[in-house]
Amino acid sequence: MPTITILPHPEYCPQGAQIKALSGTTLCEALLDNDIEIEHACDMSCACTTCHVIVRQGFETLNEASEEEEDLLDKAWGLEPQSRLSCQVQLGSNDLTIEIPRYTINHAREHH
Image 1 (cartoon, rainbow, N blue to C red):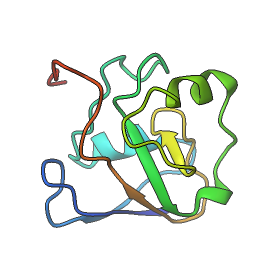
Image 2 (image 1 turned 90 degrees about the vertical axis):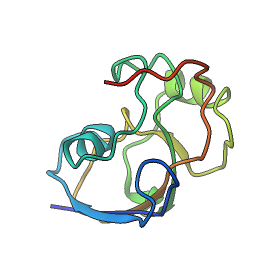
Image 3 (image 1 turned 30 degrees about the vertical axis):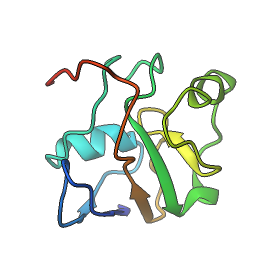
Image 4 (image 1 turned 180 degrees about the horizontal axis):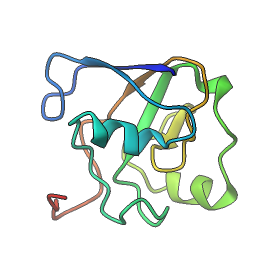
């Protein structure tokens, strides 16, 4: 069961957080299950970039991004080499440290 460290974000977790998650779930599901209300406008179907995260530690241990995810990431705000869509990251057994970018390209935030 990996530990996910979330760096401070002014809206989602101002103090930062550490959560545990089950291997096999997506990073987005793990965040939502632990009351970190990351945006996910497409309901985790890999059709937007609102759940974009930057993996600061553990990136090399993650499943490989699909071509579809890579194409979408090109549209994400604040894209970095370690960027991923949290709805596409399958958690394994390794710990991760992530940063949620301050902004998304979503003009109308929906509360899920």
